Length: 199
Image 1 (tube, one colour):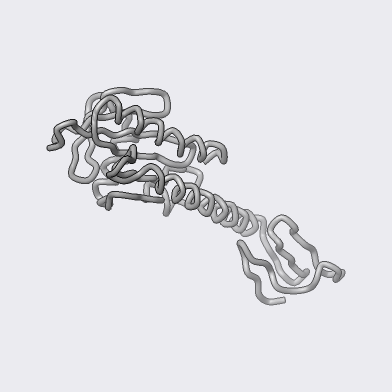
Image 2 (tube, rainbow, N blue to C red):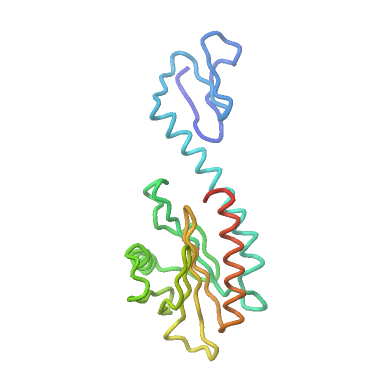
């Protein structure tokens, strides 16, 4: 056997019944004795498989959540961003946008926001998302809230920022106290679902 396909598919080759073959049931992988699969490459294959499964769950969960929570008419949020923030994941994905709705994030602004988040100087600096500049008003264990300081909206605008094991959620809304409570509930709904999968 000279070829193999890794991840969600299978390794082509001898059937499980052959004496010179062995089978990995968890991934549906099967290797004959002439395939030298190192422990490093196997771990990489397993990590790729796990990431693919996690991404599929996140994408499906986000689509369902966004369809009922993001919009301008009767929805609690006007926009939201989900940012990869998992130090244990692939380095190429760290601090990149996993999902977004209602906004087209600028990669440079996003990089500045993540730097702001990493420095943990929430009370002394502001951050920018889109065309809005925000100042943090309330800090909690895994989340903080902020108000826009350059908005033209009469009732103002705000942001709820939540951190999970693997992501940062930025939820943007218009209004004051009442809308802020609705935005908080919407953001908490998504992070709770991600938390069930330790994401």
